[in-house]
Image (cartoon, rainbow over all chains, first blue to last red):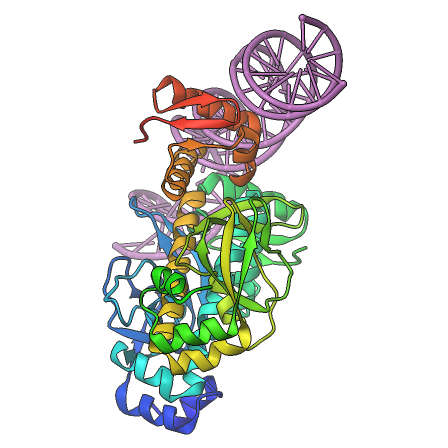
Amino acid sequence: MSTATIMQHFPTFEAGLVDEIMKNSEIRTFRVGDQLMRTGQYFRSTMLIIDGLVKVYREDDQGNEFFMYYLRPGQACALSMICATRQETSEIMAKAVKDTEVIAIPLTFMDEWMSKYKSWYHFVLETYRSRFEELLVTIDHIAFRAMDERLEFYLKKHMESLHSNIIQLSHQEIAEELNSSREVISRLLKKMEQLGKVRLHRNSVEIIKLS
Amino acid sequence: MSTATIMQHFPTFEAGLVDEIMKNSEIRTFRVGDQLMRTGQYFRSTMLIIDGLVKVYREDDQGNEFFMYYLRPGQACALSMICATRQETSEIMAKAVKDTEVIAIPLTFMDEWMSKYKSWYHFVLETYRSRFEELLVTIDHIAFRAMDERLEFYLKKHMESLHSNIIQLSHQEIAEELNSSREVISRLLKKMEQLGKVRLHRNSVEIIKLS
DNA sequence: CCTGTTCTATGACTTTTGTCACATAAAAAG
DNA sequence: CTTTTTATGTGACAAAAGTCATAGAACAGG
């Protein structure tokens, strides 16, 4: 790991903090599909994303995975930052959707850095705030919107995060992430295709123009 | 406001912090139904609940109110604590369901106290963590559960928070908080009554035994 | 190529939830 | 003690979403 890598993705971090990160943390790499974090697992470190893309899910007891939001380079998992004091387990699952590199920082440094580095303090609070707001938006959608709107929103988020108008997922996979069923998603996508919003291919959806 | 009042509800706060709170904050009281916070409003202070009970909602653009969680004495609104730096507006609405007293602390003290008082620092992080987890549980319910289960869970939370097995709400009001319709709630409650789980009265639901 | 597997399409049906209409019951107002 | 208002109960129906069954299309591996 180089100083430049950290500074590139976390430009607000002051020099002393960058040094400490260099000294005390390690790089971990995950391949597409790997889980960075499992439901029920104990946290040992905070992970800062420096490359790739991560999807964060909430799981229920029957193993259903509900997609909540993306983590991009320059971001971090909010939950892992705060479980420092009480040794808590993860309430969420996170999965790499591109090959991903993270900086893993042992939780023992959290409290110390919070008071020592203003930039770290602001980063942690901002991480919490932004993840909280993502959750609120997620709640909006499942509480107030019907499946067709949720699907469109899902495709839009996906497109923005992957910087691609082609979504490499089967209808089955999309259905699971929205906690719906394959047939429902197939039908809604078909309707969207007829409206010229998408084009459907095997294992992928090409986005033409969303409202 | 007395030192004792603060120490009673926030026993972890150290003496210096209690003094600062006494010096720099004011008590505000709200009657049943009053809004402590409106969607779109600017934050000017953080509010610590010392008496009463507050419900926190997410609103959509059509004015639907979706109930998320309760705030009890000893707790605080997570969002208001973190919007200190960037002057952000509220993403939520909070309403008193009992006559409520809060300590209103101007946001200008947030950063200073975070580094000065360990107990404040832990309180803020713990507030964030616990509200985050409440939101995750909320998401579980709307994503994975059907209305009958959500209704039972709603009644259970209500009962725990109000320390009463009688819920003083009309079917209409319950329906609005679950973003459902009056008829659906009436029918589900009727079914629950037949199963001996509740007894129905005008403008109230008496909880007998929930699963 | 052929063959088995996976993915998608779609009709028919069920269940759940939401809506409309109207009846009845309970409380409030006069 | 009426009248009016508000809350609840319920049947009938509509719409959305989930399930089942089945067929065909696309691909993968020999």
